[in-house]
Length: 86
Length: 199
Ligand SMILES: [Zn+2]
Image (tube, rainbow over all chains, first blue to last red; front, side):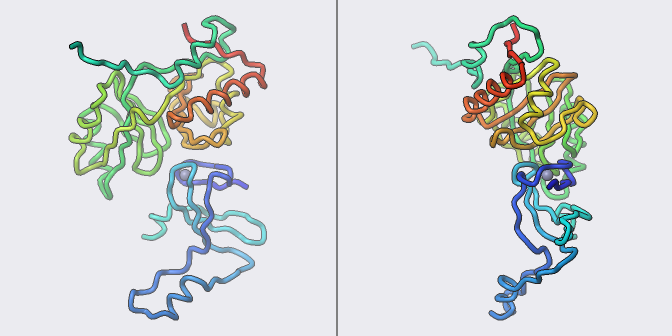
């Protein structure tokens, strides 16, 4: 499996560290325990496209947002997380 | 009492001494002349101002990309968005204080001169050897002169670039020099390459 890093180009998957779903957003500090439990533990398990965080540890050392189809591992898009966050 | 002066000793020097200075020239290994090495990381939103400042100071065209660019005695190797390895030929041991001051407010500059060992690989077999270690396409069409990459070779973090046709340089953390040399020797042998050192 190869991941096309926006900075480094096409790289083998062993250069990356996988983190998981990029969708959860940290709740406000006063959101309460239930909201934080959801944020920390609850994940969707989609059969299809998902946006995920990957870290290019053995490359540019940047966090990426990778849009991957869980059924085929086909990657539709890769962006720098710092740009995806804007 | 005479001043105590320790000359800079390349991390690969003891290994290069074991090679013959003559051979078929398909893989020629050497250490580049002593140079200063520092990381340069742009402060948030200061990328354009940093490029302008470095152009004025060093005459170099900064590229925010995985590229090797050089001007005079300064070179930049792109290592990530807004991040470079800066090389300066013949720099004094305390050289990095100067660019740190000159680029103050635009970038963070940290000396790495003693942290990295740099090996130069030349000859028609150099790209073949590197392609056995880096999981990237080393063909000149994919990795031409001026290309740079941060990757891993034999489990060792490596920054490599092609500085001129069929002349590559690889920077690794200095304490890995013996391990990296072991990989070079084994991989060269497995690919029918007999490394020689530049005379
Ligand atoms: Zn990368």
